[in-house]
Length: 392
Image: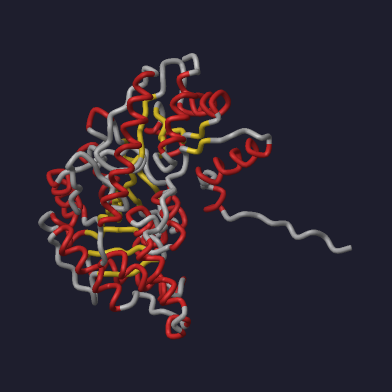
C-alpha cells in the first residue's frame, strides 16, 4: 500500500485567518441541522431578485451562440461604453472606455488581484480596519505586508492618514479605501477624498477605492465618486460591482475605472489568470446600467424601511446605533460586559439570529457587530421581537 501524500499548505495560506463568512456558514449549517429557525443577518447577500428586465436580457443573450466563445479579458467594448455612460450620468466623471474601464468577474476578483500587479515581496498595503477581508488577503497572496488603518467612531470611521508612520508610507505601494463603508456604513465627502489624493501624491501610492455600495443610500443623501476629486484619476482607480446595485451577487460582474496605467497592470494579471466575463452576462450588465433605474430606486426604499425597523427595535433594547446614510448594514455597539464574539454568540444561542462580530473585520472592529438588512421586513420584525426577549 502506497504512503499517503503529505499535504502542506503554503506559508501565505497558513498566514490567513479562515474567511469570515465561511466560518459563519459552517456554524449556521450545524444549527439548522438541529432544527433551529435561523434569521441570518450575517452575510450581505441581497434577498431581492435581480430585476426582470436584466433577467430577460440574459435569457436572450444566452441563446446567442456568438456569446459562447471566450470573451476578451478587458470586457466587451459595448459593456465598457455602458460603464462610461453610466459614470458620466451618475457622477459627471468622464472615463475612456478603451483604456480607463476594465470588466471584472465581480469587484472582489479585481480587488484580490491588483496587489499581484504592483506589490513586490515585502512591499506594503495600507488597509482599513475594520475592513473587507479581501484587501488583506490579496496583499498576502502577493507576498506583501498589511499596515492597518484604524477606523474610529470619533473620526466618523475615516482613517487618520496623519498617523501613518513615514517609514510605512514610504514602503507602501497601495492604499485601500471603501466608502460607503463595509462594515461601518460610514460615508466620506470630497474633502476626505482630496486628503487621500494629496497623501497618495506625496508618497507615490496607488489608491484603490472600493465603491460597491455607492447606489444604496437614504434620506436624500447621494454618495460621491472618488474620481470626482481633482487629481484622483492620476493616482487611483475605483471598483464597482453590479452585485449590490442590481441584486446580481451570483452573476459575478463588476468593473474598475480610473488610471489607465493601473488598469493596464491589472489587465496583465487578468490575461494570465482568467479568461474574462461570460459575454451573455456582460450584455445583461449593459441592460442593468443603461436601462430604467426605477428598480434601483424601489430597492433603496425597501432597504430604508428595513433600516428604520431595525434601528427602532435595537434602540428599544438600549443598544447604540446610528441610522446609516448608505449601505444595507447597521454597525452596532455591543452592550457593556460583552465583546463582539460573546455578543454574537448570545444572539445566536438565545435568539437564533446570526450577526457578524466586528472583530472578524479587523482588530479595530472589536466592540461592534454588523447586521445586514438583506432579509424581508417581516423577518427583521421577528428578529427584533426575539432580541427584546433577551436579558442584557
